[in-house]
Structure formats: structure tokens, C-alpha cells
Picture 1: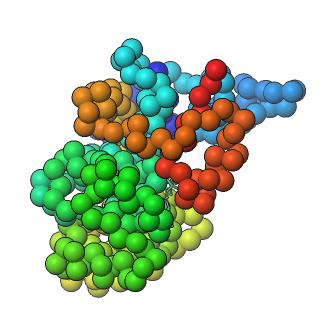
Picture 2: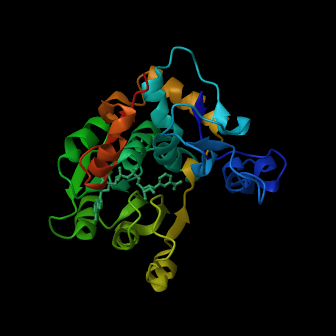
Length: 281
Ligand SMILES: NC(=O)c1ccc[n+]([C@@H]2O[C@H](COP(=O)([O-])OP(=O)(O)OC[C@H]3O[C@@H](n4cnc5c(N)ncnc54)[C@H](O)[C@@H]3O)[C@@H](O)[C@H]2O)c1
């Protein structure tokens, strides 16, 4: 099984219209006023996104689960539950990236590296990965990037314009910072599309030039959880892994026990790991 936060009701306009990832039920959780069903040491526990993935046992709605092939190793399947589905789906589902299109991915974490792979799988032309940690570039190139830009070395927007001859067809922002969202719009070429995948803190606004959008007909769209229909998409992504198109082993920096989770999160905050997998005994 893989668990996914985008559980769905099956009857609302989003589910019946083919976009179950937008189903409002996923944010509902327990009925209003009802106590959580989990407790530890006598204290009630709230479940993040109705899943609680840092736990040895989970209590979750049936419609947040998908059954997968028995020959899929679980320590790699787990990557598909969020980051891979988000990055891959942003490229394969949210927008229509034609073969040969130029693509920029800002941020080479688990989400961004999956977007790089989505661009490779869909047959993009130039695939430019941008990050502030140059150690990620070998990995990004291994997974499909044709060019890499060090965000700390000069102006990354100018560098993209130079590589693409005036801006990219698609730019995927996979960090969630105000300056990198602005850079993403700046890197997008005339008629191109900026896809916001990273989650900017809800308290922050992003100033951008509206005239830039109008006069160059640029588009901006958000992408939530890779616009997934996860019971359809995740088995497909597993087939992609097992037939060699989707590369997951390379994205795993380390395997750790559950009690290493805080150190693992610190490493991720510092940008020093791609993905770390908790292995439960
Ligand atoms: N849209 C969705 O549905 C969805 C789902 C899951 C996660 N997310 C969001 O996606 C984002 C990325 O998640 P992740 O797990 O890949 O994060 P991550 O921390 O693993 O990766 C972030 C990457 O950005 C790089 N970076 C940081 N600041 C930078 C800068 N100024 N310039 C260039 N590179 C910089 C880091 O070095 C790192 O490689 C987060 O905002 C997360 O909340 C969105």
C-alpha cells in the first residue's frame, strides 16, 4: 500500500470531474468536535493530513490508500507517496509539456528531482536544474538535467535566458520562497508557463509584474500534489520505476531508523540530503 494525503469522496464536482486531488474532504479529518482516535501515554494525538507517516502503525481512511504490485520494494515505493507524485505529476499532469520544450526546475530536493525526471520522461528538450547546493548537480544530471545553474553564482534568471535564448517554455518552482517564485516568472519566456509547486508560507505575498504577464502572455498556475488521481497514477509510476524510466534508488541519500527522524529533518533543512527513508524493523 501507499498512503496519500489527497483522499477523495467520490461524489463532489472535483471527484466526478476528474480532479479528485481537489476534493475538499481531504482537509476534513474527524467530524467537528470529535476527539482524535489515536493516543499515546494517555494523550490524544492529532494526525497530520489523516496519515501520520512517522509512525509504526497508521490509522487512515481507506480512500487515502492504494494497493501496489507485490514486486515493488516498499523502501522505494514510499517516495511515491508525496514528493515523487508531486514533482512528476506537476510535469505529466498539471501542464502539457510537448516533446522538445525547454524546462527549468528550481530546487533539486525530492520534489524538484522528480520534476526533472518528469521532464525527461515526457521528452523535454533542455532540462535546466537550478539549486543553491552545487553538490546536487551530479544527481540532477544523472536523473535527466541537461544543464545546471548555481543560484548563488550570478543571476540565475539571466543564466536561463542565455541558455534558452530568451526564457524557458515551462518553469517549475519547487522550493516555495518569494524570491524564487519571482525568479521563476522571470525565467519564463514569452508565451511560457510558470508552475508553482513549492508552497510559499500562507502569510506571504509575491509581487510580480502583471504587465509582464499580459504583454508576453505568460501563464502562472499552481500544482497541487501533482494533480494526481493517485489510484491511477501511483501504480503507473511504479511501472515506470520497475521498467527503469523512473529512478528512485539514486534519490535516497540514506536509510535511517525511526529515532533518527529529527537529525534527518535537520539535514533536509540544510539541503544536505535528497531523500532519507525511515526503515521500520
Ligand atoms: N504542491 C504540492 O502539492 C506540494 C507537495 C509536497 C511538497 N511541496 C513543497 O515543495 C517544496 C519542495 O519540497 P522538497 O521536499 O523537495 O524540499 P527540499 O528541502 O528537499 O528541497 C528544496 C531544494 O531547494 C534548494 N534551495 C533552497 N533555497 C534555494 C534558493 N534560494 N535557490 C535555489 N535553490 C534553493 C535546496 O538546496 C534543496 O535542494 C516545499 O515547499 C514543499 O512544501 C508541495
